[in-house]
Length: 291
Image (cartoon, rainbow, N blue to C red; front, side):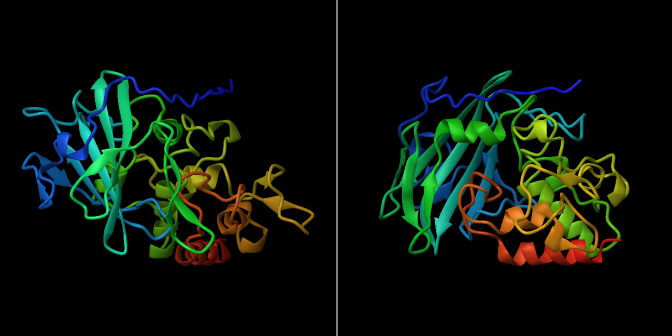
């Protein structure tokens, strides 16, 4: 049976978020950029590409609590957990995003926009801010709406993407080479949140997330739902047949094609507008060497 999930872009938060970042608990002294003792930084192995913007991440757990890691593919966070992600452009802080668990199945998603001298960051409108920061002459960074945050994050279970066994674990992921492991990791971090059975692209049955159970590359969803499978949704212009991934032929692989586009058909569809040239070349090489 196929399951289809409908996501609504809710513009009204479930809870009243603090009006300023200094009130959230991330910093003990925000003007001097002194972090609270309760927060811990973390770095995911396979970060989401955000058009070259630099990012830092922190987590804050309520005192005396810990993350339930009994299911390695779906960690459960205690109520009160906060995760922060700070965005900076050429060393200048731009925004800090906060997701906070307010109840057993209730999460709050908000963004804070930094002022010019970085002495405070103010709660962004629930509808976000379009074209907030110029990245090029024609491309701008947007502060996401709360609905857009939910659009990427919300699924069954806790909607935390970068703090997980796959992202923080030290064990190697499957793959025949370092190139393949890097490619599968990149797809997990940049495509797997939506292209997941419970993600907003679950209806495509084209998945790129990793699970701890997969012991070989051929067992990963990137292989089982993409390799040698034809696609009709986004054919490559000028080709009679387009494949999701065609071994030896990156030029006939829809995944590569969609990542290279700008505009409405660009993938990922949210959070990025500029193709990640370095990693696209890595993916091309991976598909070219695939047998």
